[in-house]
Length: 121
Length: 121
Image 1 (cartoon, one colour):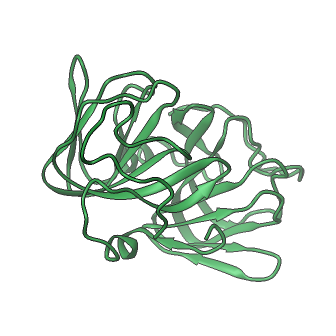
Image 2: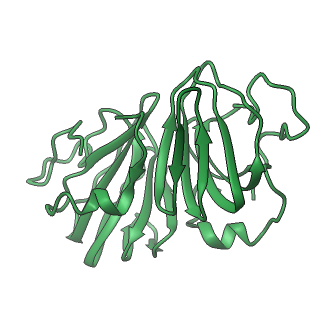
């Protein structure tokens, strides 16, 4: 997969489910994942890694313990390791997540939206 | 820096030089760098790491030993470690590079465009 170009918007057309990240590329042990998100996710953290959010289309809010980050299209944010966060979107947003292979989307928080890993699209 | 949102297009307005990547974010040991590129770069490789190219605006071609990758806006490509490559753009393109901290833009190839590292913007 890593040897083909990836068109991000075309990849989004291949799935419709929300909060279920799909891997589109890997760089070393880092995965690039696309997700459609809408509504409020669960509060969680990743104790061992930072996590990158990039908004490809729409708008995303990321609640942090002390503030809310507002991201529009073409904006990115790095949630530092160990920091509790809750992504949410009032209407569907298309986002790219970048983090090491094996990171669970809900961290240590049990949730019905806990997604399987390594689902390529 | 990692604790502020980054607007990619606004960041590009802060510099004009070409082939001189500027760091805008870090995730663990991975850096996110923006560069304006035009013309033909030098053939080089990075023996110890893959390298990600994402086109933010314009179009980029990446020559590989056996083919040429053509990327438009919103498209990405991962150059595998150790693979010789030559980025080029017939008109100026705005791109994001993602690779571990400390990678030299020209690899082991000496070139006048070899850029300093860790230049944040």
